Amino acid sequence: MKVFKLKTDLQQYLNDLRAEGKTIGLTATMGALHQGHLSLVARAKEQTDVVVATIFVNPTQFNDPKDLEKYPRPIAHDIRLLEQAGCDVLFNPEVTEMYAANEQWHLDIGALEHLLEGKFRPGHYQGVTQIVFKLFDVVKPDLAFFGQKDYQQVMVISRMVELLSLPVKLVMCPIEREADGLAMSSRNVHLSAQEHQTALVLSKTLFWLRDHFSVDEMADLQQQGTDQISHAPGVDFEYLELADGETLLPATPQSKSIVALVAAKVGATRLIDNVIVK
Ligand code: PAF
Figure (tube, rainbow, N blue to C red):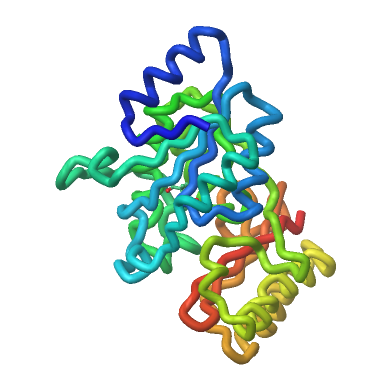
């Protein structure tokens, strides 16, 4: 696997491959890789000739400086995992390579910015669109692979692609789960064994919603799901919503697809998860 720290070196390398007619797949990550990320690499390998992974802990998407500071950064282990997964290229820039001092960014993504995650993490999606725009600009991927785990993020990036007419196709890949149902996340390393058990109420409730889903009973189901999670000891509930799969506004009986999304803190660790129920 080729590893690049500088944009110009990466661009030159990819330009040559593009000139040979090779297609490029991008898997953007913040590192601390797990099976979820590796499944994106596997998907990218199936659908494109050259797979570029990026590892960059993007400061502009963190609204809590402590969260940024304690974000895991096991780079040597990550490189080994990417090599084993057959990834072709890793781009792992420093912050100064990606940002000029006092850079400004704002993209009007409408309601998507302030609902669900946006309510709890103000500014988060501005930071995400800012860095993903830059990564698309450097890598110029034909296809970009993102995990369904961050469902709202996929919708936000998709809106950016549409608004700015970016020449990239997005592929949303299914959530990878532990055998017990917990959605894989880089933040899971912060959970103690007891907290891991406690966190299972999130996926259990989502599966319950999926299994009992009926458009006629959405309000009642959402309330019962909320009760299951908010009454669980050790869980600091944030939201559970049945949302329209495209707009993420509250689902209606007319919604073509419906997704149940949840966020809660277990101990000091904030977790999100979702299941497509329709
Ligand atoms: O999903 C993530 O890990 C990040 O939000 C992303 C897309 C790599 C942007 O920093």
